[in-house]
Structure formats: C-alpha cells, structure tokens
Image (cartoon, rainbow, N blue to C red; front, side, top):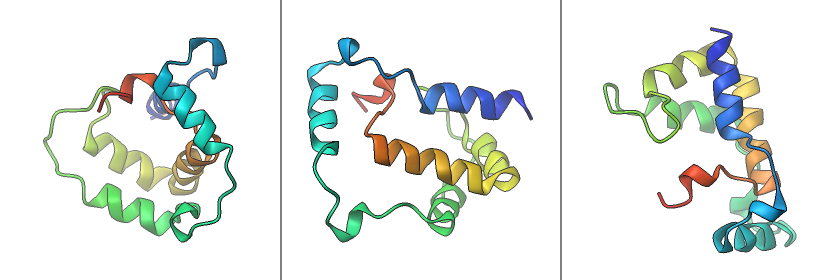
Length: 103
C-alpha cells in the first residue's frame, strides 16, 4: 500500500521544468497565471473526488499512468484527504503530467 501512493505522486506531481515545456504546456502555464474568478475554478471537494472515483468503471484498462480504477478506489478509501489535496495542487499549479497531454 505504500508503493501505490508513492507511484501516484510521481505520476501526478512531475518535476516542473520550464525548459521542458511544449507549446501545450506553455499555454497551460500562461492560463494558470490568470486570476481564478469563475465558479468552476473552485478547489475540488473530497465528496466530488469520491463521486468521480466511485463512478469509474471496473475492469477497464489502466490509463497512461498504469493506475487502474480499482487501485484508485483503494487509495481514495485509505487516504481521501491526501488524494483530494493532490488533485487540488495540480489544479492550483497548472502543472500536469506531460504523458497525458494528448489525451
């Protein structure tokens, strides 16, 4: 159980190196510098994250990060506050894994 959250952190919180930015990432970085003023830019709540994770279909192939919906559900059940914080940090920083850029 210790390895899964560590792996998720490595996938969801990559090193943020401006020199490695693609045009897509430069645009995302620029957009995140704008002030948050709309209702849809609020932080995720633990309940919102739970609802999304519970709605994931079981037995589906994992995404590019290799994390299955079953693993994500177990991690959320164990550390819901921490996982919600990870997603909110990604939202705040605008730093998203490059592997997911073309999805």
